[in-house]
Length: 502
Image 1 (tube, rainbow, N blue to C red):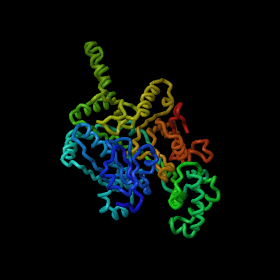
Image 2 (image 1 turned 90 degrees about the vertical axis):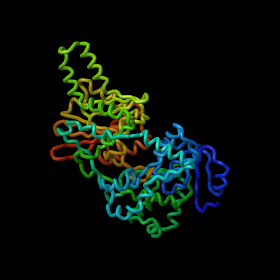
Image 3 (image 1 turned 60 degrees about the horizontal axis):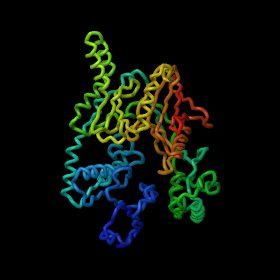
Image 4 (image 1 turned 135 degrees about the vertical axis):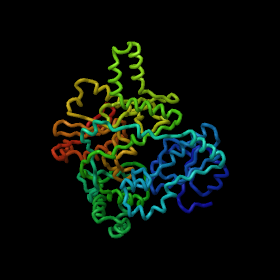
């Protein structure tokens, strides 16, 4: 069996001699020591076709390429059931449009894709949007899936949450962007393209060999893109970050990526609009444990009406025995706690939050609730915020009003565009929290991302923010006018020492 084109199988664990014979002629990498194999797994030119492992690939791995999963000799024990659920979950990654992890029909409903395009491909997308699961023991697989379905019984909790009544009193604004005809390479401070110095030399020579006319036809680009690429090869220090990273030795592939990079169009602020359906993750919260559904729903409703319940309870002081009052107060204070299998959550009433109540998990890997605050840095941030606003002279007390909201990375549409070299496109940076505050005619939108971020990636996000919301010298925040309001947008990112403002 001979491969006609590059083919790779990355495996962890043992591969039978029978399978090795069947794969004769293909490249097989039998080690996971080199993680670079996975860095480009989602790219169109990735040559990895099969991943094989012994009880692995069920967490910590995320790719939108899988279309087929094969379980070999999987059992029916509790561990096997959990493995099947987790691994299938890792495989279901729909991303028909970059950074948009929704099925194509949902993107159309949200007006995020062109309807004409949808009509052309709607009859072809079902197999692509499906994950095909096979097993060598069909009966075992059926039993596992049936058991998981019976145990899961997930139910929506979205209707239990409500918008904070304060929302109707204030104007909450979010930025909306539009794509310009200006390419990134036309910016004053160009984001340099990372390339191995040897790759640059051979790619530059390959471009000269092709010539401008052939390159224009081959890569189907705008004339201004071609001119910028020609200029970039002549002024390499201005346009390229020359390093000793992986040497690809494939000038045709690299030149194609360079053309893609120089063709990326920029985005700019279009307007500020009233917040409507940009934050919706709380409507998607689901509870995956049918037996305690009514209990957690009741607790959420109790905390949701926290002020009214506290007022009624305090009115009972002196009217009922002190022991009974203390008992009721203790129960009231404990109503926010909920626990299943030693995994605790707190259901909190945060008076200035966009929706009520807010659910915070003590464990990041919680398996009975989704779309809640669970990341350690976010949980810690909420705790520190509560302590801070309890201080009498906190910064928020100087505003006429203020509110904030958690932003979900997948479900919400509040973001800042920035260039992501890993994907070679403008990606959406979604900070974990957005704050709104107003003092007189001054209106502040504050993005806060308290989780640690990879150093260079963090600065690319800062650069994306600065291009839109700061002055040309990037020393001051721009003033944006909307009716009689003066709007400023600020960004806070986590550093090793503290939150730093940009």
